[in-house]
Length: 531
Image (cartoon, rainbow, N blue to C red; front, side, top):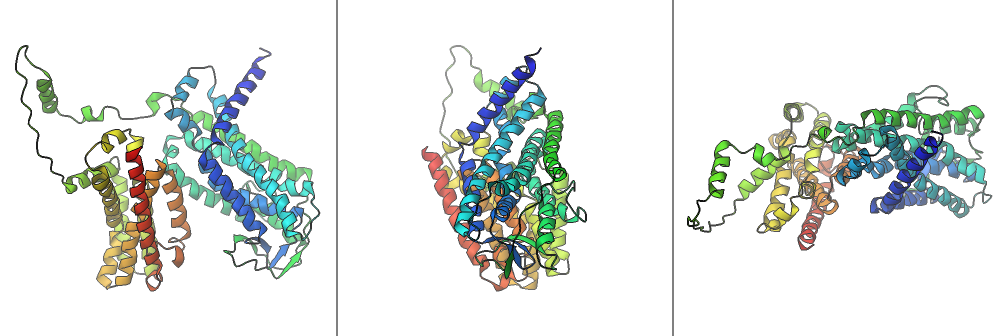
């Protein structure tokens, strides 16, 4: 009995270590790490700015450490979630989970091991960025005296607790069936947005707020106390190459880390532990009954006559002559294949999904103002995101690639049918907006809408073919949708939802982008056929 805790600790350590080593060798880890390093470079060159009013702090250890840690709690809390949200699903797909379920490992211990592994992956990225912070201070040379304590304190007390929460939320999403797949990928983006916005209304001082998990309010009030300005504006943003708008600088010596404040930040590790405990309650321990996978759908959909006919074909009398087979003429019907792809894409949608499509059609057609109709189009074209994310993915997901790729002309027949099916979904769901433009004679706006309807499925097909999963499309498309059309930023409005889009050349750019992604989809499918 005395050795039981140490035995569980060893199991936890080796399980988390093996999972960590497996994931740091993945391309997704390297890509995210590279993007994090690039953001560190932007911060070092003044393209990511942290300002109080029109003033910024001198680039000393305290300012640089805080700036880089806020990069972690904002960007890495989003991208890092998608990097680590696959650990339980991978065990499920590789059948390792069934083996683990037959061992004495408890649900709680397994979930904690996955949370520790997630945290270790994210902490490795934080460590790399902390080292880059030292190099950043030497490059800026406004204050070349490196104070390790002041530089690392924000990483330890701001970034790492936030990463612990993200690591636990990723496991929680994987244990809840509704959030396990594509819906959870999209839902987390909005959870992340609300999580960053919540500290803004978390109290006057914000130091001990239960909502300030990234530490934004804590940083703001500490900087405001020392900045010689009356402005209440606090900004942390990318300046897109324009450089800092700060007109002057001031000396900021860092957050005053009192014992109470340190305990407040360390309490977020306790929040992460509570989330992990909740996840262990939802965890099904790889129970096959909880997967709800429909097996033998072909037999389930066959009627009695079909089964009887198949039995007659397979039954022969002894000594009877074999029937003479004649080759039937092969006639390709694109309409039939398109219909099949549409049925596959729409399979499983409930009545409320179709009701939402009808509601969006009516709103985008009948709303009086152009701005409100544009928002309705944004809603209409985020509604089918989980349909588009299956394009180019179903073959690998359902294990039908060998059957599909051995059929006649899969590149010239099946791939265009998949794209046209996705394009048709875009036309149908956003048809109210397009019909309104047609009735009012807004030809340029109609062209922009048409380009958007072509761009979305092309992007989905290209990412699906090359990645074999719908996650990249779900993440990238949601991000583009949020920062572009939903906020009516003309340069990023690939839908034509903004009234100003028709007066620009932006649709032409996205038409060219659709052509590029289409060529990439063809190249990716040709690569699959040759492998």
